[in-house]
Image (cartoon, rainbow, N blue to C red; front, side, top):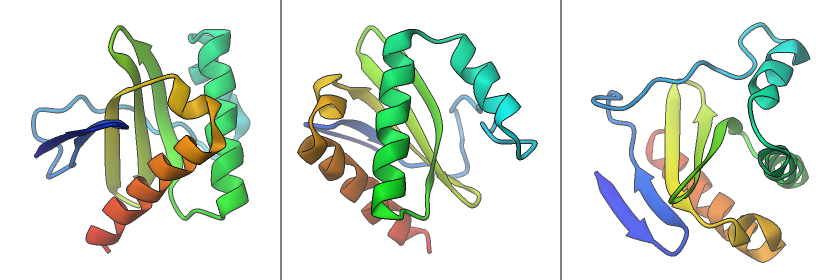
Amino acid sequence: MLESGPLGRCIFPFANRGFTRWHPVMSSGNNDDVGAVMSGGTNREGDVWRRIETALARRNEMFALGHLVWTADGYTVKFREGIVDIVRTAVAEEVFEEQARLDKLLDGIRSDFRIFR
């Protein structure tokens, strides 16, 4: 199922059919994995990653950021809670620059995860 909105397109992860599988960021439980993922990205991606992680901690969210990459259409962001992944594509950079827009994105992610609980 694919939905479009002001915060990008939402891909619901039904059995991950036809979607690329990404390796978990914290697979071994230490920060070495995070460094490996971040080293391939740009400083811009690193700044956005930190903004998202900071917002998740501030909001005490149960889900985690699993993947972040910049594409020609905007950011692709994957969030994980347990075995469920929620992916947003074509997210504009401005979403991460304003706290209210980032909170709106994270509210939508939280709402989507509730469907799978």
